[in-house]
Image (cartoon, rainbow, N blue to C red):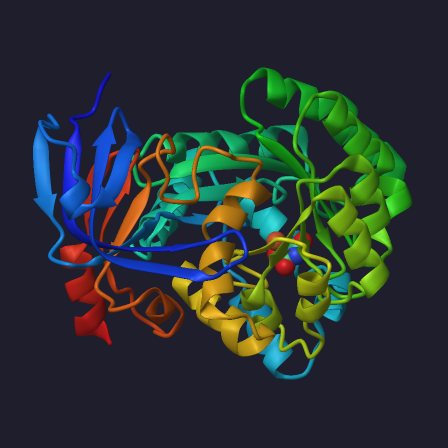
Amino acid sequence: MTTPSILLRNAAVGDTTPDAALVHRRGQAIHIQDGLIAWHGTEAEIPAGLACDDEIDLGGRLVTPGLIDCHTHLVYGGKRVADFVERLGGTRYDEIAGGGGGIASTVAATRAADESTLFTMAGMRLERMAGHGATTVEIKSGYGLDPLSEKKILRVARRLGGLGLADVRTTFLGAHAMPAGYEGTKADYLAEMSDEVLPGLVAEGLVDAVDAFCESIAFNPEELEGYFGAARALGLPIKAHLDQLSETRGAALLAKMGATSADHLEYSGTGSIEALARAGTVAVLLPGAYYFLRESRSPNVSALRTARVPIAIATDHNPGTSPMESLPLAMNMACILFGLTPAEALRGTTANAARALGLSDRGSIANGLRADLAVWEVDSPAELSYNIGFSPLHSTFLKGTVRREDSRRADAHDGA
Ligand code: DI6
Ligand code: FE
């Protein structure tokens, strides 16, 4: 099936260079063919006789690469408002987790939910994310922690990709936590997940990458070595939640495994950061979880810069530590809380987020890449990191197909 070829006229292009400088060019045109960016340049350079089915005048609006949310836990049952209230009363996140709340309570609610309920709930979340400019969303499992429930989550995630809201990439997170009541050791559980459950899910086409929670309250690097080895043997990109609450020394393992991304990194020291740099691993920073947990230790951004580790930003949408759906809000938080520049924040949700997912077909405005674009009612690329609490999105293009956001934008303003 081919999509109509479109010429976008009178656009301002907002993008970043590899060293994270902002690009802002007015008077631009973009030609989309077969879902890809076929050509882009100035209005004056439009090739004579260019044939296209449709021309859209963007009225000078800013066009950026479609935003990429490279770390979410979008599919789950229930909410965690009770945990939130408890934490406001002074109980720590790890205390709640130890007491049977936390991830375990979401696992119970997710197991109890049927597939159509999970699909409906996550579909609404995905639609709101798309309304904030996301054109690719990664979705992890990890709230099932048994074979059938993990499969249920990944099936829902795959089906969400069919809604035409955003491209969905799935990640198996069987190593999120030990399931309550599991009769066996952590080693037994991880071996079951990586050697029995994962290959079946891969055979059904449900898994694009593999993740684990490498943390004092979850799994340590030694325990995860076999799990990641199995993922690598299946040819899957490896990711990990790393050093969110304590330094784990997991970076060395991730580097050895050639991990695609290491996510959180609040407690990572310079040795860990240098190991990630040598392996070409992307650092995914998640300011929503840092904010929501009222953490005081922030990732060492200056060491990441010095070591030239690519930095990505994501929402980490999940019910326990980051019930946030907006990538532009994550960009704002990354600037305010972690000291990123707006250029780093935009690169972090476009080119570097694509790299964090092992994708080379998207993330910037370049010929031959997917025509995943976001059109914004803003004056400059830096303004994407400036706004709080509403979406200045005008429309998106998903593989060359336009989605308009005008009505949703009006709703957001009415409700503000
Ligand atoms: N780190 C997180 O921030 C989420 N998972 C993880 O490994 C939180 C999961 C939760 O509390 O439900
Ligand atoms: Fe997470």
